Length: 75
Image (cartoon, rainbow, N blue to C red; front, side, top):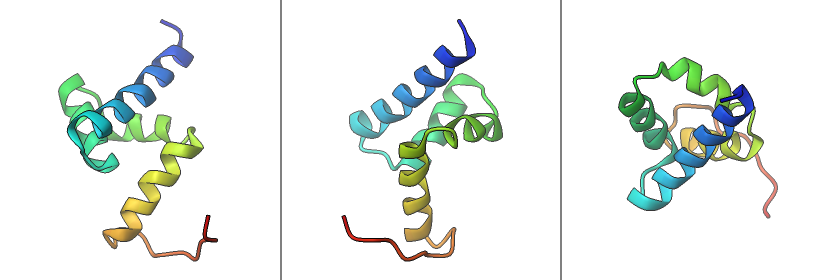
């Protein structure tokens, strides 16, 4: 499978876990890594390439005070 296909599969699987099991994005990433025997840093580097997922994870991290909150424009 080409690397692009792997990235798309990981993105799809993370979104699927969030919807199916009502996990947070952070928990879904950790669960996916554990279930597939993948390093969290490896999967994290792949997820940072997807602006949508990256944004969702950053927002969760801010809400959990893992990251400093930044001002965002209301959508």
